[in-house]
Image 1: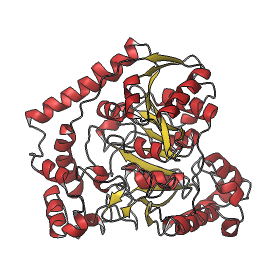
Image 2: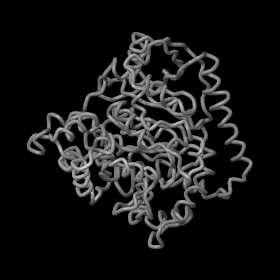
Image 3: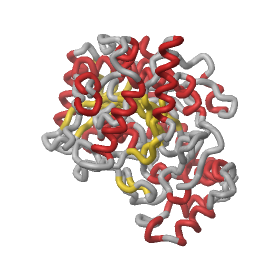
Image 4: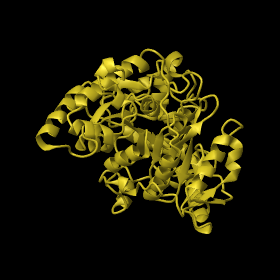
Length: 485
């Protein structure tokens, strides 16, 4: 933010939640000023200049909410670390207010959710300011086989702030990641079915946490597949991501996946931030995944491994099985899950089933079918009852290969704390297992393309992953903001 915009620019560029809270407590900044500053940056860089196109919609009440949080702080003190902090939500997360929830599709461009999602409700309870909705890959990249990361019929193409139009922005939480990376918001919430938080985090040099499925409620989120869907934090630091994670977790009576998290989640994940957290750890290194990096990114991973060793970690070469590459489970689950979501929408919305969505798209192919809808059509061909032997067999196989024969076996056999993948090349196996991962910046290629490394472990191992990721972040400090013209 320029000094002309706020008078406090030097403090706000790359500002952390802790810094912002201290400034607001000291009277050097208000939430109103902070929100206004971000809005000015959105105008300057998202809708002008490089036109990153990461923000799809602004909350009409954002400034009013910020002002209310300022008054409450003055009278009662802050509710917690997110009091007055602006947060963007991916456009597939319901808010029961004046904002739309569309999954990036023009088919839902006029859809207002009937109520807040669990995620939105938790953020409001914590005093956060929901700044708006972030653009995303349409239908969370489950529409067609060749959809570019960050493209949606409603929002257009999201650009990577480190190389607009040059470097892939990642997806499907593209706008959430790009906005955080470009300092257009403090924090953002994305969603992941397989790589959709981790991939844009790596591509935009930020931190992304894909939690254990069930740690955060899925209620009020436009789905792909109930077996793999989860929301998760995107932030510029591990500390900020840990703060946001603690605000989002909890048991939700409407989501049975969360019932198993009772007694296994923490409201404060910052307790696991230890600068020497790598010391004495055993980390599995699947060398076969390095082949996918290419000559430009391989030196970054080699340097990351050296940093891990220098910080006291023991690196163990492992043979990592690959997760099944097919999307059979997603194809079957998408129809039943999406139909259950769409049927709740207001009668004024033009679609209330997957079949109606396909027909809506076919009526306006120039706008709606720029890249096709092969995945939508394939899913519609299923019964929607999840009774097909192909689905049941695929689900059992995915669980065995990703959990029993995959991550669980590797962690036990090699006595590991976690597995370390370059970029997000382990996203699929963790996604099919429903296990957590965290991606942290690992540097930039000579062309300025960001890359992260990903720590993965077993169910509800977020405390371990946060400890390892934070220690790596502290000894490397790779993140630097993009240079926006």
